[in-house]
Image (tube, rainbow over all chains, first blue to last red):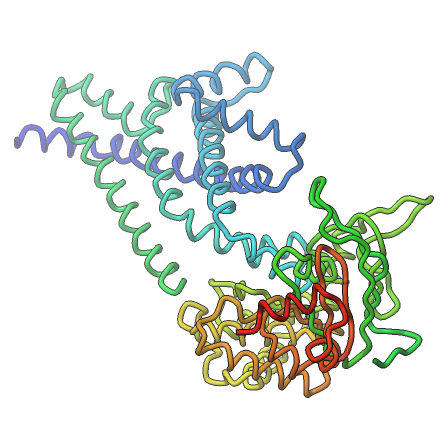
Length: 218
Length: 258
């Protein structure tokens, strides 16, 4: 045990860097994915059929494709098209597209669950369509979408470990490098696993707290 | 019946279809300023649809609705009717206030917040001014102490009174009331009817759809009986309730008398 802890101490900075990169990638993906998901979700509910169709295809393709395949596609396809993305950028792109589809779909569900009387009341006092969305529908939809949204964040933290496959130096790849040096395979994999677990439990708790605070009165 | 040259609301030949079902088959109705008109009739007669057309919540296929001299909802270009732009629809909707059967308060806003939303975003008033108006109207419907309560913390009758305050605070030319007591427990009906009565006494122009016959008789200047998408009778309450001319109205009144 003492030997392992010594090795952890020796490898503390690479592991810390990997952990930070994992968090940064997940944060970037959830931020961009949320913006994308809001656009997608609103289109899925309100756009006319022809406009809605490409969004529907996007969501179904993203949700039906393994995340690893998405990551590899985001890594290889842009370079063929002459776009030079770093491995990290390609990884964030893949996770953003993945998150955008999931968040879009869950926002669609939340919006459609709002009783039609809400939109009618909003229109009857003279709110325009964008105002109705901003002040009446989205506040209600986002509140009920909050728990699954946090869940998407957890999925992204876990999914970011797949980026080790394209050489992004996040927590899993850094862990594997340390294992290559120390040969303490099980110990370091368990260690990395615990870091993921603790992060996600913390995120979950933050979500529960926010949910209680935001949802207490409705 | 007081007919002037320019009624506040004039509905001419209104036709409305849901798919192949014709729910309004050429409705003509005029309302003068400060007039209170109740529409009665059995379910499916088109009363609620008529109100929703006036509030532009429904599209309609034929006829005109003229509110204070302005044709609303549609424009004619080269002989064809077009629904007007969203922004113009919103402006015209704000000229009428609507109170719904199921209240439809915004659950994420307080009572005062519900009343303030339209004042802030549609009439573009400042926060303080909007709050003052909201509080005045909440006081007017007897809920001065409830401004900070959320809808879930209010009774059905209180929620409906907030909804009335929300509609009236926008200072609409015309207020539409769609079966405002139908979703209430019996003991809460009276407080809402009293509120409606008092705003009628203050000179608001009201178009009311109701199943409360005694209320229609008490509060209205005129009562309109609709059946199967048409207006069958239109007259002062004493005449409609006391001396129905058509067989169908007589039957309807017999069936609703308890």
